[in-house]
Amino acid sequence: MATTDNAWRAAGNGIGDAERARDELSEALKAAGVKLPSLSLDAVSCAGTVPRVLIDLGRCNVATAHALAAALRLRGAGPRQAAAR
Image (cartoon, rainbow, N blue to C red):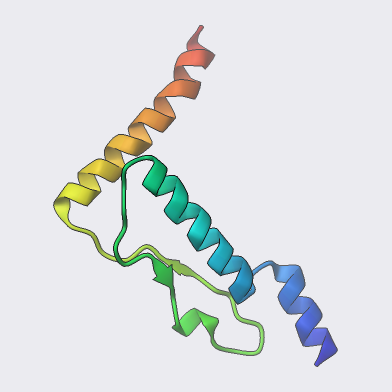
């Protein structure tokens, strides 16, 4: 059992780590003006002796998809412009 616990922690895929990552993503999206209403942990991936937790980005409507694309384009524009100078 201790070996399983160590493997679980070492993988960085524990449920607590995934919850923190989900919350971090949610806050970053919120700061960019985007809310993914179905953002959650994938329940099936939480199962098993050593879970490999996935974050489910869920489904969103067309307006949210456009907002997410715009936020990603804005974020991606900065480094490219700086590199071009």
